[in-house]
Length: 545
View 1: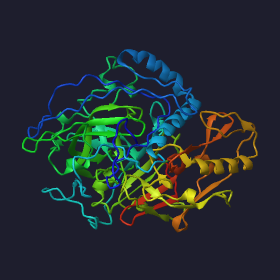
View 2: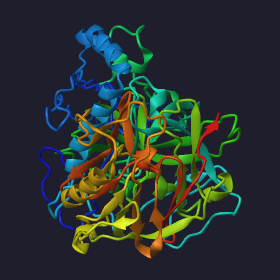
View 3: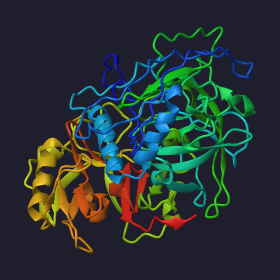
């Protein structure tokens, strides 16, 4: 993801790339308020406040450019609410918004150029180091350091919670969420489950661009962003700018640190759609929210996260924060890896089943799910950049079991991570590079028997299925390295923006192909970073909470 003025980085520098977040109905962009003075309650460090950011504006580009997005200022709240009410019931607009922002984000997130750097150079080299929190079951004392070959995990030890579909929220945000409890006493937040970024962050009470600061606080609570109050948490500890941990996160432009009088570690983390969060890097306790299905939750102490005091852009959903699960040193999955076998998994329920809950598990998630088929594995590829993303090798693409006639080079990733396939829980739709998209598009076009419908909601290939009780569509199969074949049902990729209309939910991209979260509905997906492999199997992910 590319900020406006990011300098080039060498391939050696770790790419802390960002979120794959879609907004399905209402885009909320806020302007930056004037910087506020104040200090954290912790006496050890001085608080360094982030630089003020310029407001971001929605760009009119892509096939869904006619979609009107709301840019909310404090004095425009009433109009925004009316816009929200008009858009909420329109499935066509919802899908168009997902198309619009998926295209904007993915175009920048997975560019065709060799250099994919998205952040300023860190303060100094991290030397490949990372850190891990203290599990509540471990003795207190010096922070446990993660070692590459560490397997400090018991067979029965897992960290799990319920997954909520974004359709449960006003605006039908095209993401999946998990509810976490942060601090002491605990404060509750929904986090986007995002394997396409590293940083864990939530908006904090010093936030300069938060909806809850708008004057009218009695309308549409969904437009009022939850805010973490660090001053109320007895376990909140800012990280010093002179510490080793601070080297792992990009600093704000012009940031300096005096080791003899260290301030708090500040950061600016940018996403591909030009969203960004700026704030203080800190430690606090985190636990999964207990539910009827998961009545007990293990508490993790000293988890590193971003306390975002200035958060702007389309990826800022207003529902809470982001749970970065990428491969970088600051991600939640990296921090927890030493305690849970360096493995995590999820099972996403059908997106529009609002009352259903899926599962997010750190540790061996297979014991928590009933799989409908044998778990199949494919290797996770490494890149020279050691970047955030989970790259996969695809050997063939089939439609109705007929392999597409495409050059093998179109499926490959180069040594810098360009091209190839990426699996991303934070991207809603699925993207293919342009040559692949053309081949897939034509194969479906030749095999669907229903009459064509006009392009709808930014999707090009649509069909009129009026009078057909159970439409039947061609089946796509993606053949991964190692023989693992991914065969999602057509309902995962033929979307219904209008009654009696079905549209192929694939988009094209210049740089890389991306397997989005709708294609992963009702699949158990396991990221085994210890064995460097990805597993998947059909499963019944839905469960009433």
